[in-house]
Length: 389
Image (tube, rainbow, N blue to C red):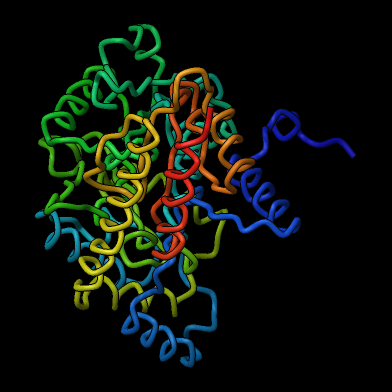
C-alpha cells in the first residue's frame, strides 16, 4: 500500500508525543505531574449535564443531525454573542455550529486555500492553522510573535509579494501558547491590512472567557469592518469545561460561513443533537460557573508564576488563557529544559518550539491540573532550583 506523501511527511502531533512520554514514565512507576495539555480538569457544570441527560432520552436526538445545527442553537449562539460582546449576528447566515472549533479551523483551509495559496500563520501558534493549510495544498508564511512586540504580529514585516498571494490570515487572542491579549486597535489594524490585500481573517477566540484580575477579552468582531473580512471561531470547551463534548462555533462574514458550511456538509454529519441541547443550556443559562472556574485557574496561575520566578525564569503574569509562557534558563534549548524537568523531577511542560520556530527559548505550562498537583509541581520546581546546575 502507498500512503500519501503528505502523510509520509507529517511529523507526529506534538501532544501525542508528550502523552507517550508521560505514559512511559508512569509505566515505570514514576509519579508524573503534567502541565502539558490545556484540557480543563473541572467538570462540566451540573445544570448543563442535566440537560444532556434529559435530551439523550429523546428519540429525535438519536438520528442524524443537520450539518448546520439546530436553529435553536444558532439563535442561542447569536444571543450569547450579543450579550457578551455586543455583536449582532444573523443566526441563519452568520452562525455555524462546529464539532469543536478545531474541526472548523482545519476545514476552513479547504474552504479557502487552493494549491499554491498562502496562509499567514502566527508563530508560535496552534498547529492546526499550519497543518490545515498543508492538507489543503497551500503554503504557510509564519508571522513571528515576539516578546518585544507583546506577542502581536508585525504586519509591516510581511513581504508585499507574500501578502498579495495570501488568502487567509490566522489570529488568536487571547493567545495560545503565549497568553498574550489584543486590544480593539490591533484588530482594526488587521482589518485595514486584510482589506488592502483582499485577505480573509480567521480569528480563534477560544479563550475569551478564561480571564483574570477583572480582564474581559474582546471579540475580533467588535472591530470596525471586521465582519467585512473575517470570521471568528469560538468554543464551549474552555468556557464551560466541555472539551470532551466537542462543540464550538464559527460566526461572522456570511460568505465565509457559507463556504465552511459547504465543506462540512460533505465531510461530517453534524453534532449530536443532545449535545446541541446541552450547549443551548450553557449559552442561555447562568454564567456563574465561568467566574468560579476562573478563580480556581487564577489561584493556580499565581502559584506557578511564583514557583517559576523562584527558579529564575522570566515570566509575565497572564491576563487570560489557560497557559503560562516562561523563558528557559540560559544555556538550554526549550526541548532540553523540558527534558531536564521530566527526568529530574517528573514535571512535564511543553517546549515552546512545539508551536513553531519562534517558540524556541520558552516553555508553556497549562493550569488545567488539579490544585493539589499544582502545589506539588510548584514545590518540586522550587526545590529543584536550589540544587540544579
